[in-house]
Amino acid sequence: MATAWITLILAGLMETGWAIGLKYTEGWTKLYPSLATLALMAGSFYLLSKSLEDLPVGTAYAIWTGIGAVGTIIIGILVLGESRDVARVLCLLLIVAGIVGLKILTPD
Image 1 (cartoon, rainbow, N blue to C red):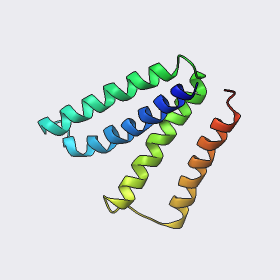
Image 2 (image 1 turned 60 degrees about the vertical axis):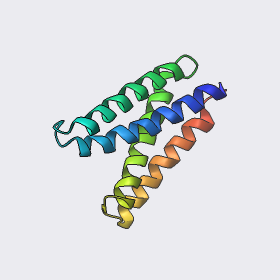
Image 3 (image 1 turned 30 degrees about the vertical axis):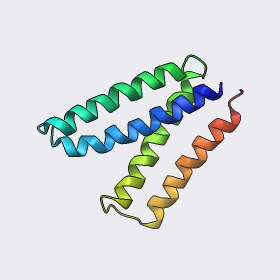
Image 4 (image 1 turned 90 degrees about the horizontal axis):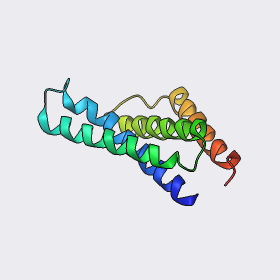
């Protein structure tokens, strides 16, 4: 079961990578960013599917998208200069709380 969680976390991190990568594809007109984004998409979906062998689909999907959303927002703030306003950060913390809650409440 621990392997499934690690796999799911890696899938979520790859989701963050492809979400950010989409910005750099410039509408799929840039070859290398597009290829990297496609590779991250494929890897993310594959690892998500592997984690589903042991984890409930609802929990895994929510955590996968949560990790992707949180990671993308953090990179947006730190690298892309996106808004850091208090309300946005509080909403980000709510997503993190939901991810942690789902992990705690999912039986091993």
